[in-house]
Length: 386
Ligand SMILES: *Cc1c(COP(=O)(O)O)cnc(C)c1O
Image (cartoon, rainbow, N blue to C red; front, side, top):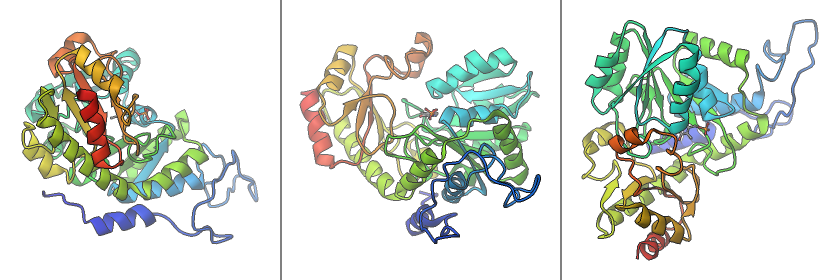
């Protein structure tokens, strides 16, 4: 695996990147600066040159952003009130008439924003199967300003070659944004592979405890960071300080949690593949995954996300209604295991024809394997499948 993270370094970054004791007391954790404004010593002379209003600057949020930039190999982190707000902010760097190329198996909420909100404002989108980089190249036009990828995709676990597509985007005068929510920076760091922007729903693995909605992005370019900060300041989708603090606390154990998610995901994918009641398992860590080699090249672990086709809606329903540890819910990436039926839940708004083409059948079940003991998780699936 080419991109094997140096675990010790990642672990140290996760705990310490961008953190320093608070100045007045030495508090080792950043205080929750629960304030909307700051007193200025003189007219238009805010302390630190930036603390004039909390939409613009908040020290708790900044501690989160510095930590995230550290673990995603970026130079700037920018936090948002949700994952969708982070993605929307990047789209607002564009103007009416600009064109975007995007993976067709993109998260349902992102697809809805693109098709039903931003198209109306004059931004145009082409949806492609980014497993083949040539489909991205073929969709580029002189107006293309952004290529948007998710890899692995939800729930089909398609893989896009980040490095190859970064080259294609740049050759066409476009930027590449990668939604790294599914992989997490522990397993994959798109900025190191040539992406210009990496974005996350922190709601998932980064926060990891299913108790906030949040988003964040990182870049390596000062001018691009300035453009993004300007749009965030001008549009306002910032996270509250309490949520920023919770997310930072979650991220300090990302390496421990991801190691457990990766191990449980792999063990469960292997167990399911050998089970007679299962038609097909989609997991990039399995040699049977059609893009396993590419996944192994650009990822160092394969997460706790496993999709399994049990053949029919009846069997899918029987499975998700009989698990006791895996809870029936949307979302993913928390310490507790979740199970869902994408065609009827997260992907119900995707046109049926596109769902079928992508393989999101009514019998497809998505597992978010948590960090419980693997024997208990397998035992739970075993009794529910039986
Ligand atoms: C959940 C999710 C989002 C949206 O994030 P929110 O925090 O729910 O707004 C975007 N991309 C992916 C891959 C997701 O899983």
